[in-house]
Image 1: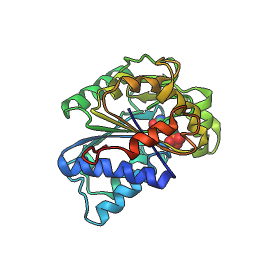
Image 2 (image 1 turned 120 degrees about the vertical axis):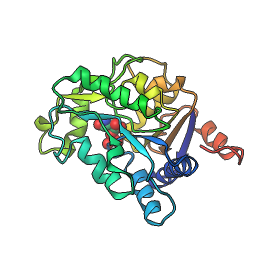
Image 3 (image 1 turned 135 degrees about the vertical axis):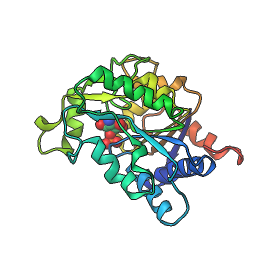
Length: 260
Ligand code: GLP
């Protein structure tokens, strides 16, 4: 796990965009795993700017979103179907037919989850998965207690996550109770995990992610078992790490030939 602490969110976004643009330049038909929430917005903005400047093309890229609310119409402003298009894919040259997400309106939930797993596998698996982290330690919407081997399935949001996400809705009562999310096992199959976390509200979850014991209590901790993880943090999100100085030292001494 490579932990990189940057002065601010903009610097994190630039590094995250470097990793993704580098991958897409090397492998134009790369498969990207996309996350919603505020955390990756800076990365998306940076990639959109680079696309508009002619520095990168997503024409052959395929994307799979991590999760979706159950019961929101897909055209709802806050459905992740709408959000990911609005904040990212509608602003680049990706083929809209290659932008995928779980269908939160499906009537046969188990069949939809199995279909989504098959679609990811058929595309060759995810090359790089962008992740945020919830204050409960969730990745995707894998709340505490999630099986560390789980696949795409229905989950019930914790009251805390519904409170955190209430800012996107008129009232907390409008935040859906249920979601479809890639499982922890699904996320762990991606070849590179790139997690971005900023702000002091994330400091506890980040401490567990990087230095805590691996446990379903903090589902993000499973990432310690992944061979290629990049954690991009601002100073506030990194504030509770015991070894913060060592991570900074390691990054400063990183051999020039090593990319993210
Ligand atoms: C959301 C998403 C996650 C996201 C997390 C943190 O609800 N399902 O993918 O990483 O919660 O959100 P934010 O980045 O807005 O803090």
